[in-house]
Length: 231
Ligand code: CA
Image (tube, rainbow, N blue to C red; front, side):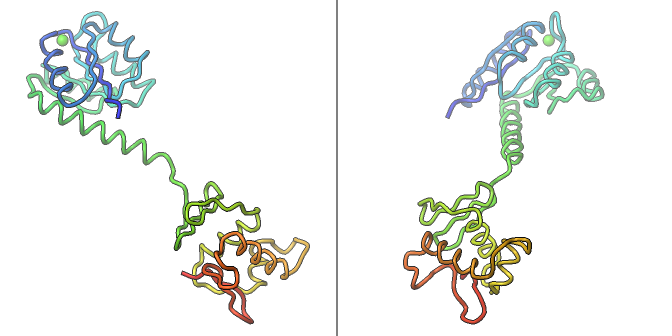
């Protein structure tokens, strides 16, 4: 796995180097800028996984850098300052920093906070990507989002109506539906056709997903009633 990149903007080089050493020991890749203007430019031009900002910096201060990063990126920002007043000020301004550390701090505390913010951010990102809606029953996997069907990891190509019918049955397992109900549900009343259409489609689906169509494992025929998806 590629290591996470951190940018430190800090004009006291000894502090910057100390932070860098500890972060690198924890497997991070670290860049340092010692002036505010260079720090700001680099923060916006390059992609980092996290920013550590000092507040009192030459040329452009940490307040300005924090505000400018936040206008463009959601990347976590940790603010460090020797002055508690400055930390109170940046909190009060609501510039979007994620955490505040008062100098002097222990390097291990910094590393712990960095890790916590990175994992929180990762969770945030992964939870914002919607997962596919999948039904999985005894070797058959129906990906409702991607509209794909797999049996023992082998993809089976179904027509639109075959897919809709299979998915409807599998979404209501062990529920017996009559052919009329299925026809109404999948084809709606406007459609041309009749309940024999359902029988034909069930046959086609079975040919695609069953090992032995004479002994169906998934869609069961309930004689005189209709069909159900067995669980
Ligand atoms: Ca400073």
